[in-house]
Image (spheres, rainbow, N blue to C red):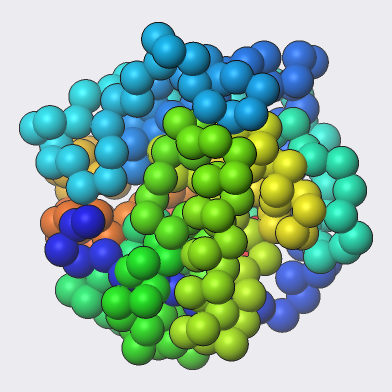
Length: 290
């Protein structure tokens, strides 16, 4: 496990029940493929019906890879037509065929999501920056890290941010049996609840690698499956200017921006956010929680 990872709690912001999101609706259900994004990178992996990959599948990387060892193709933004659904806790229903990639909360509304923390080094820096600009973000946290840094998790929740489930140890769910996938999610939920007294209402699959079993489990546990639509690949440390340029070039109404506070050296991410957040605010964007 990377030296600065931690976990997280779940805080619910006001009027969450009124917020809507867009789910990408594919004509073919999942088409036997899962997108694998190594903290922002991806390859497509063929899946079996229980969510495990076929023998030929090989993920491009794992949590904690340095930029020099991680090689993967850029993760394409979803382009299929979308339909709105409400992101509310309701009775379990049919499992969605795709996770959420976009918000549907009006013009110039976007979301900032922070993955793989908390980190005792970078999470406090991100929190100070968010406080400076009055921005609320969604922190996608790893269960074993939550257990390691519960005080930081509580700081995130106390600052009014939302904490969501990111599995127990950043596992690639498409490579696990159905029972192991469920255990990864459930164990992280328990860790978040133990740290904060709240249970997460959203889940994000590590690497963006979604399986049918994970989506089914999300439906049964009333967890909104959350993905992203803006990926600056900050995990690979491409340079502060490149992170800024990618976010400013690809962000539009409804975008869900992916960034990281855990998994390695995130100084470039923090530096980029110092520029990106005020620029987006100056352009009239408003930050919301999915």
